[in-house]
Image (cartoon, rainbow, N blue to C red; front, side, top):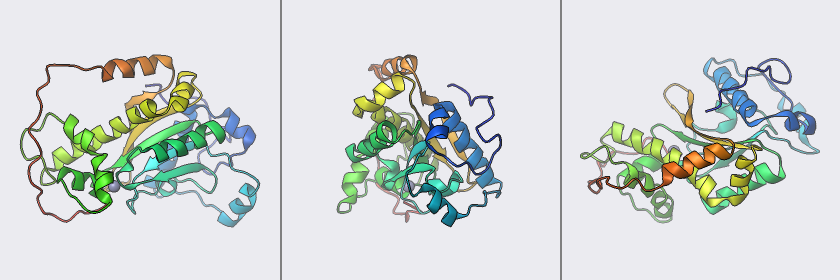
Length: 262
Ligand SMILES: [Zn+2]
């Protein structure tokens, strides 16, 4: 992936940045990624920026110029503004159980990037995700079943764990979680010609990431970073049918353990 740029960010330091039309225009996708890395570093170090939120209300009342759009889970521990230490008007936050990429989510991302100028889309999964756990256990419950069905492709794609394919196997859950995030990045490109074109023109980047609820750390998945035509070509090659891969056995019955989170 393109590493975070070495250039000093506008403002010259970590901490609160006020985003307006001018500063937003200067943000590149790698710089947006750097802002998020810096914010998560502050969060992990318990050095969250002091923000006068009422002042931010005043500063943003005439418009918003967020630099990134983040899809995360509804889990109460995964608020994007908090874990990336961002304030009012800084990021678009899209949240659905299991950070699933639906058409509505894609529409929100298109608004954020094409109409509101955001330069980076993040698909953010997290550890101990109840939605992933539920999907691994084949849970069915009202409308939640529709959401969990959107995680099923990741379960089908996980082919390295032959046995104990349920939430009783944390390693399996971890692998499905990661595949689901990778798949989410692919879905953004497959499902949105608008965003795909913007990635090709290097107007935006798309990346997957995983948040660890034990440590507060966000790990960006560098190999999922899409920026420019070449990365899209690489992606389409990866998505080409590999063939010859044995299908894993179907998931076993659930462990019956309560889900620790959404
Ligand atoms: Zn979750």
